[in-house]
Image (cartoon, each protein chain N blue to C red):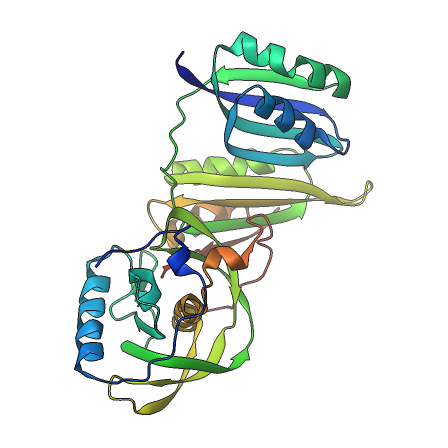
Length: 173
Length: 168
């Protein structure tokens, strides 16, 4: 049988032991993991995992069914091209913060996209208090046109948000 | 010469101090230096990376620039460090590192921003040095190889980037 790669996404209410139970079920079924990322977003558990497995998506769903049912997780599966060993090295980091309001991510990433910025990693958190929430957004990526261009692209947003653009130097030793 | 890559056991453990400053050592250093310059992005190399478990490393940031504006990165040129000993550390900074011995992975590592250190040259003469910034990072990275440590041993979370970097 051919080995297939899938992107497996799981979402549910966070509780301890989810990753261990899900990965145990996969391991016992002969599946292997590629790259994974788990984040707690609000009180929600989220994980995306690259999974290599003989068999089709239906078999993968069946494999995980006992665990997803028990833990109340929503499962989504996509067939993917693994594309491993092609990591891009980010050369710029953008850190944004301000009073929370709709549109921060859209405006910032819109300005970045127009400047040819290729995002490799993005994460944001709503911090502060319920009555005065603040938004913190950290983006890393590859700037095609350099720091100055990115800085200028974000400048029109500086009335409402504070941002910092910094080069990421990578030492290869 | 070839680069040993993780998880090769020969990258682990403490390398032995150099005691014989002879022609064989000097020839090895010439070859190590030339080899380093054939490697993409290699701003430093340590003898254990090519399978020689001795306390020898080279750091050379000559000509390296920062960002699209190509600002030069301050450096002291080629530093040949035999039996290096870092004696003082000051400040710390989060920075991204990769390694010729760990292909296709880069990660965040905290290093001292300023160091003082001693090292011998290829004739055995002891020198005292100071370094800071990116060069100090490179020296700490290479010196780690002499103790069998890779930057993987010092990784911190990729999502803990809220360290304010030093203003330039």
